[in-house]
Image 1 (spheres, rainbow, N blue to C red):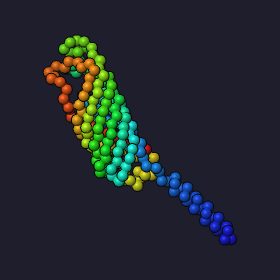
Image 2 (cartoon, helix red, strand yellow):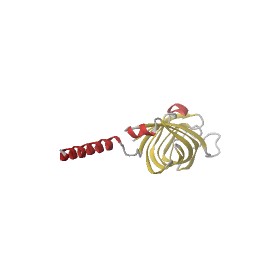
Image 3 (cartoon, one colour):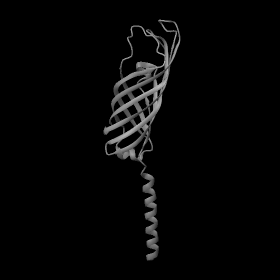
Image 4 (cartoon, rainbow, N blue to C red):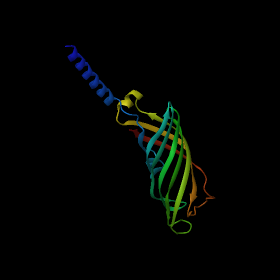
Length: 192
């Protein structure tokens, strides 16, 4: 009887351990997010990225990302028909909960057809940099997120972008050159 009880207790421990391991998911290091604001305002811009948390120590964490930026052709009064496409990449430093700073970079081709000043077409490789501050709001408590396969969040960021280099700049009416410009984002994401 003692042997049967020991075997039964050992079996229960093994089953309990297996169930506990299934219920505890590993930390969610990967993520995917899309900018839900830019297709609406300013319009015609589509941006998404994949993220990966490289390290974490309490509230401090580092995250790298790579993604895309698509702006199909649109008419601009001071330029003509304009479009650009870019690969984006960067780093986010989390300071406290979802509060973070981000270094942004994008590289890709830009197109200007039927320029309003010269009537010519321009193609250029563009390099853009940016610095943003933001906050990521997790939509569920940590306990619930730990049990979920996918954990949704919303993040917003404010900052500045700057077109740092162009291989073939096109003329723009009333422009004296590139200067930093304000950007604001609203992203929906999933961590997994």
